[in-house]
Image (cartoon, rainbow, N blue to C red):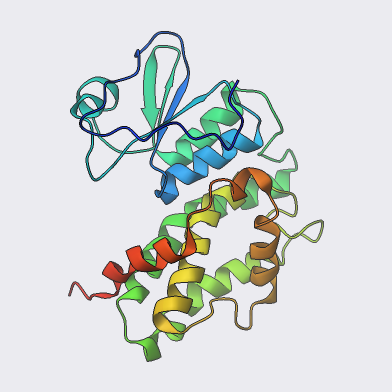
Length: 236
């Protein structure tokens, strides 16, 4: 059984496919993809080392991935019980419903309701972040304020821990890959600290860095800043 930090070789257009649908559960990811990181970190946290990690090179994708594994040709996707499913938020729920390990969905009614709303908001947050990267530096704080304040207020709702629902949950894993990338990118490219005036968000970022299962999936900071330079060009 592989340790959580042992990453298999990345598969590209020259790579042979794994023995598909042989009973092995496989999580297809890309090492730099924030969507895949959500599910990868959840797999780690739940201790599901029987789920085999299969890294895919998205810049040089194997043709067999689209043809034989997952026709949408995106990551993450999960091969389990003879079928392949995708979409990161759906897969977070799938892991919770179909596998063991520590629970990532609270039983408390108020927290479950908060989780639903926060998960619905993830797309708004990410779209706002990427749009703001293309704005002039002087306009960034105002562009980001509504979504960042939304997160700050959400982090104040439960006082039994530093996480969105107080306790660590799927909500934290849904936001973490994007918040971390924006934290790095806006600091490095727009001279703006997204935690300014938001102590709960800063505390949350620091707490996430201490979650070992997540830390093992974190991207290289310099690579994040370099990659996110392309979002700073306005597409209007």
